Image 1 (tube, rainbow, N blue to C red):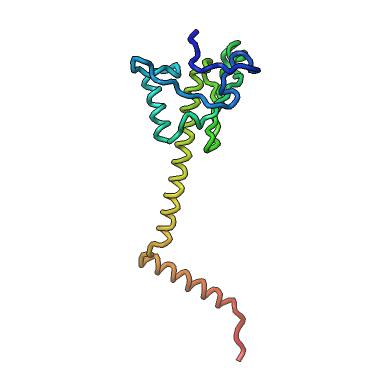
Image 2 (image 1 turned 60 degrees about the horizontal axis):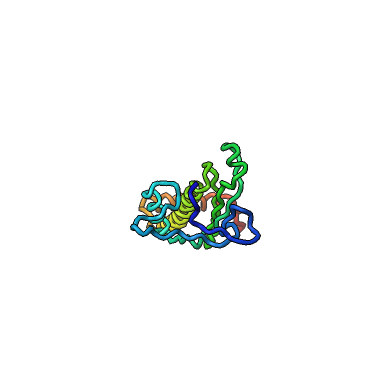
Length: 174
C-alpha cells in the first residue's frame, strides 16, 4: 500500500482520518527532486495536469476546497461499506458542494469530485454570461425600430380597437 503524502493528525482522531476531515485544507505535494510532478491522484500525469490547468483557469485554489470523506453505499462490497470512499467536496467562496462515490477508490473519487466541481463552476459561470447576453438581446429587440409593414399592422389594429370601443359607447343625446 502506498504511503499517503498527507500527514495524519495526532490526538483524538480515529486512525485513518486526515487533517482534511477536521476542516483544514490539503495542499498539493511539491514536485519531486528529479523535476517530475508528484502523483496526487491515481490517474495519468496528463489528466492531473489538465485538472490543475482547469483549476487555474477558473481561479480555484486548493486551499479554497473543503474535503470530507464519508462512507459510500451501493456497489463495491465490503470496501465501500467499511472504508470512507465517498468524497464530499465544498468550494468555500461559492458554496458549491459535490459528492462523488463513483469508484471504490477514495483517491480516484477525490480526482473525480474535483472534476465535477469544476464542471459545476463552469456551468454556473456560463449560465450567468448567457443570461446577461439574453437580457441585452431582449433590450436591443425592444429598442429596434419597427418596419413599415409592422407599423401599418399596429395602426390598423389600433383603429379596429378604437372602432370597437366607439361602438360600445352610449349614443349622444342632442
